[in-house]
Image 1 (spheres, rainbow, N blue to C red):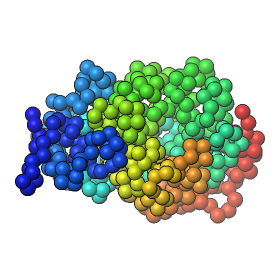
Image 2: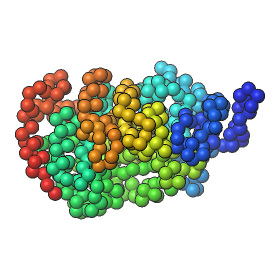
Image 3: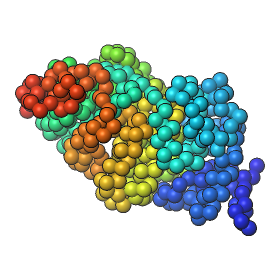
Image 4: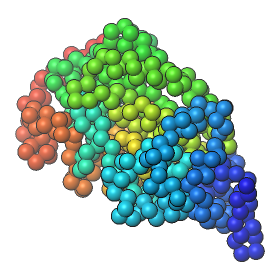
Length: 464
């Protein structure tokens, strides 16, 4: 069935849903690189008008990537909850946008709806929304997860403490952890991106984090962001591992380029859950995503990068993760050219993830060759805080010296909490107060923390 719309004397025709969604997307360099973007603002508006009148059910009748060719498509189709979808079944994409903005779309209603929304529906409606719409609708969504603490509660903002080091030096890593803890960061997790892929060195990093958390009874969870196969091997070898991490994407072919498939992720989840290391919950998976990954792997099937990104959230949703975050500006300006595109993509990703029922965080970041700066990141961070983002990154000085990109600092999280009155995860907040890092109001204590000498001694003695 042809999709078309006339603008003045000109008629625009869109061959299928893939082309329609791509042409309706806000301008971004990745879609232009793939040859998918609208050729003009007029064509983009025509696509949006057609999309607004399209019934949501069309996305159940027409797969963007054939069912028989892609296991992510099969996952989306086979797990769709028709009963949950029923309240919006009669709506068009445009009417769905209006409904999301209405008082009918309460937190409880959106929570119940999430299993009935497909990634393509979420991506489609996001293309009709202004930034303020994405913020308001996402803020209505609440997704709570648990392992050693409780994440995603209203009025809370968590931070992944990211103590990366270019040589995996244990003292450097431990010093960054100490720095982050003294600024009240680390409730989402303490997560290291390792340089090495050697099992023995990875195991030493896991043991370093485990010793820290056990010795000081910190109610948080650790993660070493190695490939999932390394993590399965570590579990089988008795290494103390909390969360299983993996980068994921929205097509089978892209995931295959990462060396994974759904079967492997299921194996990893079962292995991690078998350890029973969580104290308040059993959400054990941590996923990262990013717009442009399918295009960079030449595995997008002609689907625009934001819709591919939303499809990655279907993969994440199948595993009840503790944490999911888009690394929004990390892949580079070939995919998100400047601060404006990065800001828009961050809001889109957060909204789509929350609408699909995920505990979304965002790595508010950019690479040094993008047309962006830290002021752009301040803007996105503030908007995401207003939108109810579950967590952000805490990187010393906002400059990751191992991954060589710019993110958000421990100070940035303090700014956002002060601005919006946000607290930390409750169990972690209680620990910070108990050891003297924060005062009765949850602010950093002005006196020397009682735990500082012991933490400093641990950092100085760290080794692998």
